Length: 340
Length: 292
Image 1 (tube, rainbow over the protein chains, first blue to last red):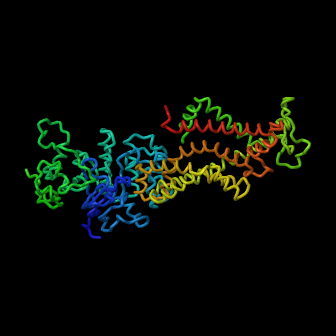
Image 2: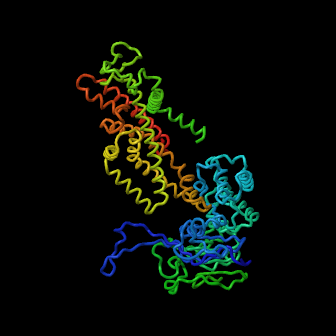
Image 3: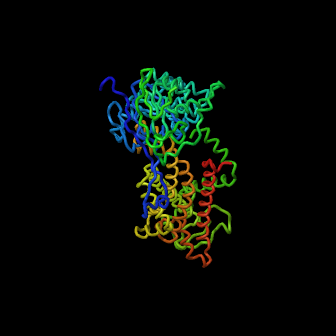
């Protein structure tokens, strides 16, 4: 293993879900003969992504853009339709059962909903100890102490170990989820909107906890979020996703300073601000998110984009490197990037 | 379930007189069945205690109110009806409970597996259940029993073969909704194996509806056993259940000896009534959608 090998590399990752419809809906006339047409939801389309050890990559985009699907495909909750996921150089996306197990230890997930992510019939002790038990990390006798240790680290009193999840608040439950994800000593944690279900007053606490844990356990985060102010606070790099495509990937400062994709600009314009003067009317765009079932030709964003030209309707722009001022890599998928 | 939740459920349970009656009846009859050897004046299974001169005695309770043998009369073989009912209750309840446990076990596992795996496994198991449901339950049990012969063990298996479907459907439906929850995804991403997820993560969360179905179906299983025994395909004649007793009495019913049929029939009715009331109440309490 070389030193500069990325921890995680995603290549051409694609996930399509079949739209299950009745047989009658699928029959259509095509050129004078009956044909069975099966529709698919293009949730994730050819995503390329690299995560260096120790960094935090934020995956942002509006709801329904496929960021959660991408996260779940990387961790193996979905099997990709196409493409590969390399962890420390090894392709893992199609490994099953025993072969997959070592990677299940190294990659963990924090879920969005702290209410459904903890089994209501299990005690906190058993929930946090589960990864240790599955991977045989800690002997039976030491497990309890280890759980207490973890609970203290995430800010829970060890005396609560014998309680059930319903006896905790949302924030506390998310702490339990974080403790569980740390229990197997993972290298990569995929956090799927870990704070968006929490009260605003709790969000900052949990966010700080995540950052503290990253420092202590040398974690790499793939942080899925739609909250850009959180992203700015937490991440080294930002990847913007639209309709299953990555449209812009850049370092956090660069992208906040100079967003080059019209969609990224739209996202940033949507951050609520107290400054009335900063509100820019011109950035508001018309239209709904197009359905991911029938992908339009050309750039996925062109029906909503204010800068659409003929080329945008014909050809989908590839994610290519942009000359960057700051020195870091700035990837962009746009024919006519914004430069101002 | 912890102590506090249990007490809360009890105080809610108490609100319904019908439920309380059901609980009382069920407890009473279960106790009577359990203590049958102590309560009954004669042992109906002991052939040495059967004398033909005792046959078809009129219930002595009609003349004097005393706890003695033949207080509910006797049947054609000189069996004390009261004792026979107590012992018959024992067999009926035993068959009801045992077949419910067995069918709940088979059905829950089948439904859990079908729901969790989905796809072809699901289709196979649930179509099998659908096909079985399209036959009358009694017909299936009749076929099994007439091919196989009499016996308490066999009747338990026959009833379970009919009743597993209900548990399988319930278990599958609950599994489908539980499977979507994040704690299952969390277990997968930790590396827990599929059988372990089914048994230790999902199963405890689908037990409430299974328990409810179970209490309601016990009564059904008891009735099915009684029907089979009434038709002469259930338990052996030497160890009659309530259904077999009704059958025996039915032969002499129109010659004036009504008690041989009526008393076991009443006992059967009380058992089913009690368990049904209890089951209905449990369903009301354990199903949050039915709460006020």
